[in-house]
Length: 332
Image (cartoon, rainbow, N blue to C red; front, side):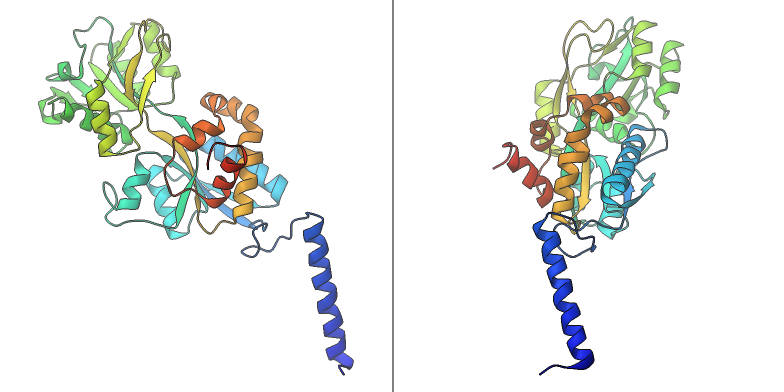
């Protein structure tokens, strides 16, 4: 027979167990981080990119929503594509955005990574960032091979555009050393240099249509270089994140035909130990349930569908995200 303090502890334990059971049956979340599938993390750190950019805007919108709907306090860090996957692997970030071509390199320990990274998986591909290879419409440059001896900007040194352009040129028999000049500069400065005739071409990955390129397409007018089909296949064999992409005619003023290129996707990632039910509800409510609001921040998000989000990512996929894709019928 249990008496005194022991009896009171037993009664308290039974009451607590019944309370937890009642909460579970009625569908109310029990906020115990790291326990059941339905637990919401009390705090979460999100790896984005520079303040004012699309990634930072999206992360900020999700941070507000997670605080309001789940009671999760979210800290958004500027990060960057490579830094974000490293932060996920180290446990510094619980969610993050990255570029599609960076992720397989991180898993394999190649490219920018000297050892394989693990501990994170894909949640959704959000939108493609097609490689723009821009020249003036009145130039004599029609193919990638024509860039030999020309003044070319691969964007900012160390960014994805530099690596992609270098690979594309190499597959067309052109090395950076064959160019007349390599100019590292941002998109806006490159557009001014092209407009003023001080630069022959700029290459970089941007969600389309891009405002700066739209302006350049109006004055003085541009041509986007297309990539041969065999080169696109070799690029994707090199890295599955280099997804073949067609930029349809009319994307930019004066673009009278489709342009073939590669388009790494912006991909949302999460730590593997982030609760399955939390990620499932995030994908259902904060991603696909909020596309209208997110599209106001990032217009390419308006075209997002579950089919696209699932088909443009590769394994591993977070169990919470996979649960959603199976529920809507786009995954087995």
